[in-house]
Amino acid sequence: MSTKKYNVGVIGYGWAAAAHIDAINATGLAQVTAVYSSRPLDSAALSAKHGGNIKAYRSVDALLADPDVQVVDITSYPSQHCEQAVAAAKAGKHIILEKPMANSMEEVQRIVDAAEKNGVKGCVCFELRFSGQMESTKALIDQGLLGDIHYGEVDYYHGIGPWYGQYRWNIGKKDGGSALLTAGCHALDGLLMCMPGEVDSVMSLSTKSKSAYFTPYEYDTSAVTIVKFKNGAVGKCAAIVDCLQPYYFRTHLMGSHGSLLDNRLHSDRLKSDKSKWSTLSMKMCDSGDVSDHPYQSQFEAFFKALAEGREMPLTSFREALRTFKVIFAADRSAAEGGRPVKVD
Ligand SMILES: NC(=O)c1ccc[n+]([C@@H]2O[C@H](COP(=O)([O-])OP(=O)(O)OC[C@H]3O[C@@H](n4cnc5c(N)ncnc54)[C@H](O)[C@@H]3O)[C@@H](O)[C@H]2O)c1
Image (tube, rainbow, N blue to C red; front, side, top):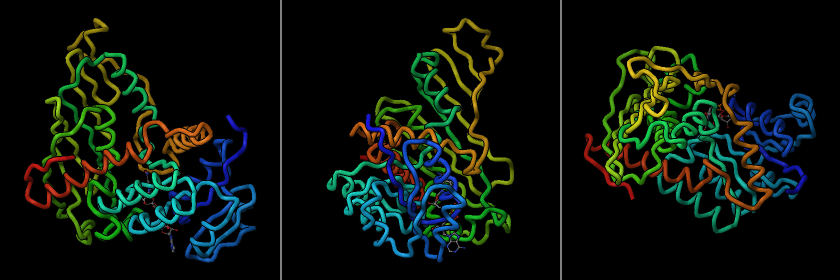
C-alpha cells in the first residue's frame, strides 16, 4: 500500500466539517489542505486551528481546480450535495459525502452515476456502521448467535429542536427533507446492515408532535416504516426527530437462535438462561454529537481502500444507494397514506 497521504479539500465549514477535519488528520493516511466556505476564512487561522497547511477557498470551482487535492469532503447543506458531488466527480476527485447523499432519488442516482463514469470512489457518512455497537452487533450475527433473523427493529430517537444547531435549516423541507432523510437514515441503514437480504417493499406512516418546539417543521417529524424482505423477514424502523427524551439508537433483533436488545443478548447457542438477558460490553451509539461519531475509523477504511484501488467496505456509494432507495420508497409510501411501495 502506498504511504502517500491523501490531500483532502472540505466543502462547507460547519459543525460536521470540524469533526471531519480532526478525524481525517487523525487517520495518519490523509490531511486536510483546503476548505471552502461561503464565509471568508483565513488560511493562517485555519492552519493554526487544525494543524498542517490549509488554504481557504471562497469558490467550490477553485477548490476543485486545485491539483494537489485528491479527495473532496462534502459537508454542506443537503440541497447542495448533488451539484457539488457531481462537480467533484467530473474534476476527478474521490468523494466523502455527508448524509443524506441528497434529498431526491434522482439526485442520489446522478451522484452515483457521475462517480462511476469518472472512475472516482465514494464514502457516505453512515459512520454508525463503524461504531462499536454496530460492529459488535454484526460480529455476533455473523457468528450465528442469533440464527436466521426473521424480525428486526432499528430505531432513531433524537429531538432536533431549537436547542440544536441544525434546527435553522433542518425545519425546511428543502434541506431537512423528511424524518428519515435528515436523521432516521442512520437507523434504516443500520437495519439493512443487520438484515442484509433484498428488500421487496415498504410501508410507512408519519405524524408530528404538537409541541411548539416542532411547529416550524415543514414536514412530518415522526415516521415509522415496515420493511418487507424478499426472504420473508420483516423489519421496522422508527425515525423520530420530535421527541423530548435522551438520544436513543435502538436495536432489537430476533432470530432462530436468540435475540439482541441493544447490548443485551440471549442465544441458545451459548446455553444461557433465556429468562434473563446477558449484557455485552460495547461502545453504544448514545449521542448525536458529531465529536462522538466514529468518523476516524470510517475514513481510515476509505483511505485504505483508495490506496488499494477498491471500493470501501460498508459505506461505499453503491451500498448507501441501496439504503436511499428504501428511504425514498418509504417517504413515498408515507405521502400516500401508508400504501405499500415496491423497492427495485
Ligand atoms: N453523519 C452524521 O451523523 C451527521 C451529523 C451532523 C451533520 N451531518 C450532515 O452534515 C451536513 C452539515 O451539517 P452540520 O451539522 O455541519 O450543519 P451546520 O449548520 O453546522 O453547517 C451546514 C452548512 O452551513 C454552513 N454554515 C454554518 N454556519 C454558518 C454561518 N454562520 N454562515 C454561513 N454558513 C454557515 C456550513 O459551512 C455548512 O455548509 C448535513 O448534510 C448534515 O446532515 C451528518
